[in-house]
Image (cartoon, rainbow, N blue to C red; front, side, top):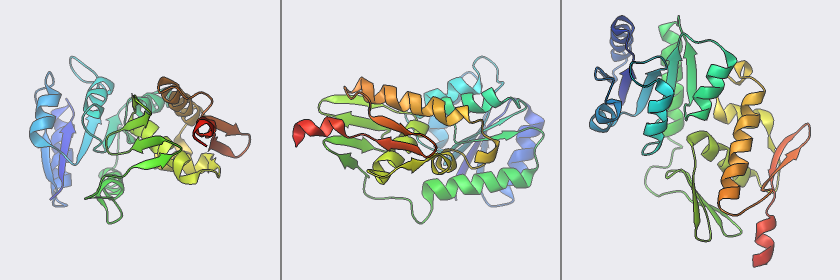
Length: 234
């Protein structure tokens, strides 16, 4: 039975979500200690997290960043905030999806099922750790790590998804729509700037491990990996 954790300080909404999700035979935990979300998270070890943005003490963005330091479990933000920048911030801080309030519970369940399929479905790797390599560069998706020589860069989940797509597609182009679909279920509602922001962050992570100009923009098409760093190993 998959475990769902709900972090929502409006207890009426939290209990409503909990009761509805339990109907579909999920094990649901509602967080109540909003000063120690990580403590509850470590205790529950959920397979998916529903996370509000406006919370006491620290906001949902903060808690998502803390979770991403030790887990890649899907995180779906649920918030009354409807601005485009709020969705960008959700992605920037490690979220996988975004639902606005008021919401229909069937939409929430569809999002939950979608994220669980992506993370734990029949095509998900369960036993052996995946490592993608190219010219001495190694990406460890389950660790959210990018390595080159003795340098290591810690990635967010979104940065990992983009880097994985670039490596998978090399030397072909990773299309913008394909990348948006990988990053966000409802790409039609994502601002065009969202992908640009994430690509910029990926480029910076390559720079951290000593690789410049790693991601090439192909105008009107998407992005492509430039494996110039491998020339020294040729």
